[in-house]
Length: 79
Picture 1 (cartoon, rainbow, N blue to C red):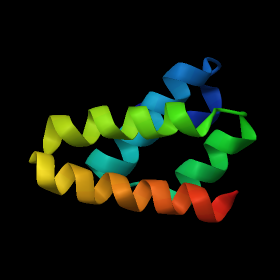
Picture 2: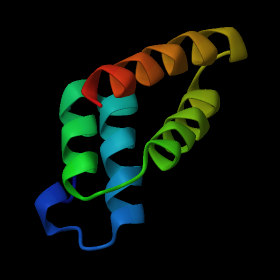
Picture 3: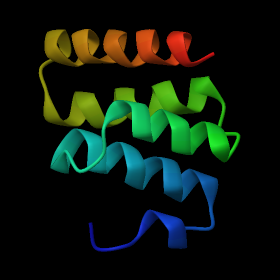
């Protein structure tokens, strides 16, 4: 990524960049994204919505929904 996640001050921008890295570049694992978002106290709903938007912009609706279910399961396990 062109910007280090640790340098990002805004939670919304952090969430967007972390999700984008996970979905597009594969530089972060889903577990790392969730851990980093939770450490910034970003609500699960915002994490899910960010993944939903990013996945739908890159995949078919069926693929995106399948991947989104994985994200939701990972969030439930991390609770």
